[in-house]
Length: 328
Image (cartoon, rainbow, N blue to C red; front, top):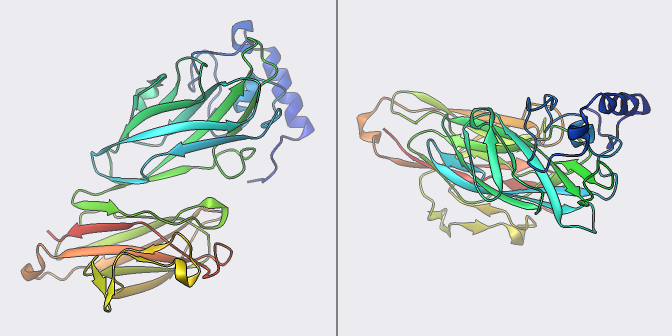
């Protein structure tokens, strides 16, 4: 995927030409938001060109000021759990406080909140009107595993025309399409806790377990949103209160990893190498085999990961969130 923030001249010509074929009502902008498949809105509007450029401006993201799409929510939840989320737009057009957004989810159910509406069977959400640059909604995790959101936001000047606006995608580079916001839905009986610290590009390691840990069976600890081809330590602890005589949680700021916290003990450690390509797209998986021993039932286990990230901080490591489970 190219890291350029603007389309090539040939692509720009195609966007403009496509725009000439749109109905006048589309070119004037849509105060009620856009969802893929509605009224000629193109596919992948939240994750590919031309996105908002189909109706606004010349096709360039950040054309009238850099737009930052901020998503605030828990990064993990237990199966069938519900969480609140907020989308805010920063920067962009400065002579107005109007804007809009569109977001697509790979799974779960989105539910409308303040000034929002949903479509596409609960997998898409957008604004109802363009009178603000902050919106709320809810998300329910209906299937265990990783869920990704892609989002685009548009700051508008309110002149009712397709000029004078500026838009961008979610991600550290708002000119780059398709950067996902990741959420992990943990299996029944698995509870996430704690907060990961930011690594290179602002990506935060995301730990989760998609299969309920049960005696006599194996399950995987997954670590997403890490640099690719880097060492990852996945570890199991028997306590989240103390480890090796040290109290938990244990801040790692003094070691040079500001904001990173050791949330559980490192009683059993596995070392792996993340796979994937591109910033933040690495993933590591660790398999844990539970002996078929009935005496282990109801044993509490805690999992977390440390990730080698040389440019993240002085320690050169980041820490994920943690998860707790009780063996069944």
